Length: 341
Image 1 (cartoon, rainbow, N blue to C red):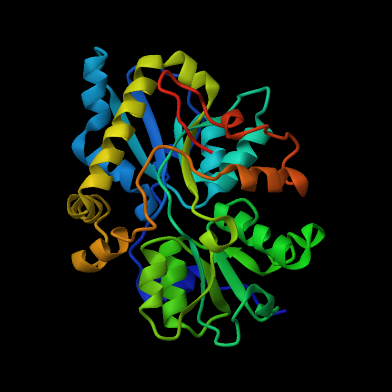
Image 2: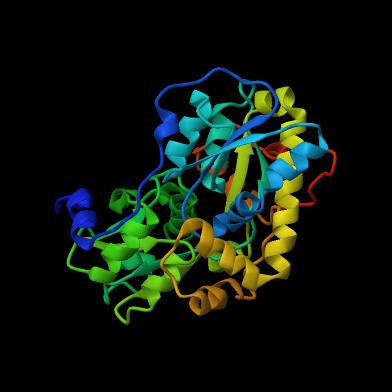
């Protein structure tokens, strides 16, 4: 079997300027009073609602309506496993990650911390892309290939791959391709795929990284998440029951901020693109970015869509022990209940 991708040297060689701002994860902290919220996001356009919230100070705005001066701390991580660990350690209050990590932590904390989702971040197709011309379908990956995902076995990309494998070979073979996956942040995986010359020949990505990779003629789409599950909400925000119960005003301000951000992003794609570039400092052409987010398959919305099929699948194959009866089991039901699926 070939050696693992030399991730650190590769990143240095390509000159990637991405850092994981994980300074707040040094040690668990005690629960705090109303008026503070610590949020962890990851990479990509799927987190644009959080970019809008941050850029426009929306949490602070709605906090003032509740009589609070809310202090907001932002952290950027890579991979659902790191995000879940941060949430359970008490280092963050709101976790941004895929439905896969949500279902894992919901199952793990069921009857204890009772972690549930607060809202969706929208509906977006995720692509599995490859620079190996021999790989036309997932059945074509071999031991010579490595597939980058944010977190092996836990990330929503890993779960999508397992779902596709189960459709291809049956439920007993759902984790057949896990041995080919490695954890690499999206920016670095994209750069490696474009540069070529390493064993990393696949990347289960998200926008805009999948679109940037596809600009290279050597890169092609192997699998579209919409093809296996239909339009769905792959990325969500979640929190512990304790934070929600002990900080009702702060929590409410956060939910209201998200709702306004979703309306803003959905109704003004140009301003949304400007916000993404301004907040993330992404090196991407504005026209290119606008073309990506103007995709009719994109929908910026806090309402979860079509998440339950993945939940049912994970229970069926034994990846989670508790079976949710519906999506409402792993989403908080607030004063303004979501009408999701």
